[in-house]
Image (cartoon, rainbow, N blue to C red; front, side, top):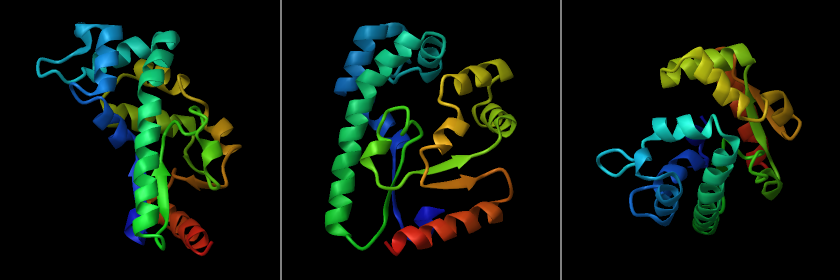
Length: 180
């Protein structure tokens, strides 16, 4: 929605996928730590196998984050700097699901948290990833609760209702931040 309104949006999930492509340094470290068993036949990471490990073993999740997060942060910083230099009038937003958990929120003057009630979050996660309720609950439990994240927010967006309701909130926030 912010992109449609005119902002550049850098997506940390996309960057995270790029840094773990086969033969990239992060990929090599992940394979060295977790072994060949977490690879698909084409050399890509088997996200389901890796997820099953890291969502059940907090130490392994931290290890994976230590491998991936610094590279994602560095790449996002490079992209953000480039966009600010080449298109200084446009708003640049960085979409980072683990922004607060990774302590990256201190790098930004504005933090926007999109939230829903946990029951809706659970339902949407199960539907999106085609996973069981048990697995979805484990994934949610592995993250900071949304109520805690809201405490760090400059702006919040309640995404529990219609597309139009969310768009109105986004539009108000975009107007505010693009004027600053």
